[in-house]
Length: 151
Image (cartoon, rainbow, N blue to C red; front, side, top):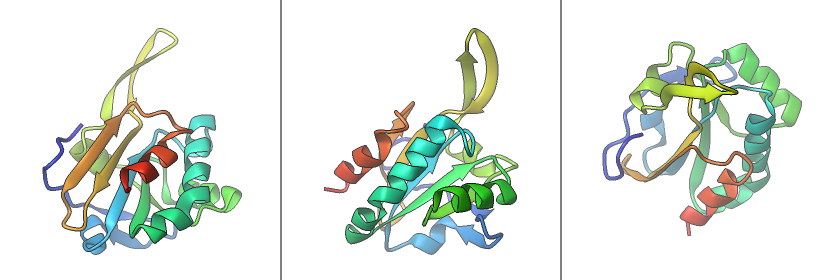
């Protein structure tokens, strides 16, 4: 996980519509940058739907929400359409941003060790500086937690 007070690494990734997005495009706005393991899984769906439901409140506080996983553009598009997700999902199939933000870690699931994305959320300020960072977050409660961080 990256340290608070450091400049957030810029990246260039395609969104769910295949459009290129850069973190630097969001300068001047607060950014909730959340990394999640996989589209259409129980925890990731709860997290995304809770961000969806709270999105008007994030917008009121001048924040945008960006979700990142290693799933493809097509997978993100299906995920967006299935759950009506009104925010940007970024496809990081090469794990460029995932590795830059230090969220690709060894995980143990039912005794099996594998590599994967550790659910992590960063709050980045208008100048591109990381002001809050949370790893191993609880999927369902993370959106409300992040909304509270904007207070």
